[in-house]
Length: 443
Image 1: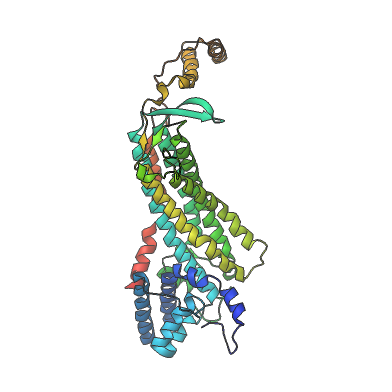
Image 2: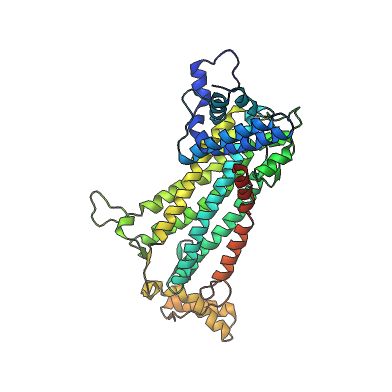
C-alpha cells in the first residue's frame, strides 16, 4: 500500500530501491507517528473536518495501536511502504472510510517531519539521562580518588603532577558542555512542523497552534517552507551535538587504553571486563574501550555524513532525505550503548596508589621547586634557570608534597560547583513540559 498510489504500480525494482530500509527505520518512529495522528485528528475535529463521534473512534483505535507498539507487537507489513501507510491501513481495515480521513490537511512530508522531531526529542531525553548517570559516576570517582596522583603530560611528555580526582572530574565537566550544545539542538527539535503539509501549507483552515500545544512543542516552525527545509538541518544539528559527547567518550577511552598498558600500569579492571589473546596467556585487552573509541570516532564523522547527503539541495522535499534515518537512528542507539558501557567499566576500575613514588617521575615536580623559589623571593626567570641547571647537572631534588588550593586544582576540585552546573543545564531542557502534554494526549 502506498498513500500516493493511484492506478498504476511502480516497477518492482524501483519500488524496492526507493523504499530501501524505510520499513526497518520507521519502527523507530512508530509510536510517534501515532502521537502525531492523535494530535492531528483532534485539530481536524476542532475545525469541522471530523465529527466528534469519528474523532472518538479514531482516537480509541490509534491508542490501541500505540499500546501494541509499546508492547512490541507492531510491524510494518511486507508490501507496506512506511509507518504512515501501515497506520492508515490498519485504521481503514478496522473503521472503513473513517480511517481514510486522517490524512486531510497534511502530507507524508510534514508527517515524517513531526515523527522525526518527536522521536529525536524522546531520544535526547534518553541520552541526557545516560550522560547524567555517567557524570554522577565520574564525580563520585573523582572524590574517591582525589588523593591518588598520576603523571600529567604535555606533548605526551612528562609535565606536571595530576591526580585521578582531576582526571575523572575533567571528563565530568566536559559532559556539561556537551549537554549545553545538546540543549541547543533540543531547542531546534522542539518546534512543530505539522501543518506545513508538502512544504507549502494547506487551504484547509488548520490550527497549527493547537497541534503544537497537544504535542508539547515549545513553539512552531512558522514558515511552512522553512519547516520543510528543516529536514536534514535538524538531523545535522543533533548529530553535531551527539558528536561532542562522542568526542568526550573517545578521549576518555584512549586515556583508559594507555593507562591500562603495562608501561603505564596506572589502572586495572576485573578479568571479566577485559579479553584475552588466543596465543598470549598474559593478555588483558581493553576491547570495550577500544570499541567505544572506534564507535565514537564514527559518531564524530556523522555530522559530515549527513551534510554530504543534503548539501546543495534546493528548498523543498527530496527523496534522499530518507537516507538520513539510516545514518542517525542507529547512531543514537550506539551512543547510548557506549555511555552505558563506559559506566560499567569505570564503576569497576582499580587505581594504583603511589604511582609518583617511582624515581622516573621525579622531574614532574620541577615546577613545584621553581614556585617555591619564587615564593621565597627569587624572580621567576632566575628560579626557572636555577632548577633547569640543577636538573642538567644531576643536582635536582624534589619534594612530592603538593599544596594546590586554587579553584579546579588538585587540592580544590570544586565538585559541588561542577555538579550544580550540570543540574542547571539539565533543568534547562524542561522535559516535563512535553511529557505532561503527551500524557494528556494519550488519556
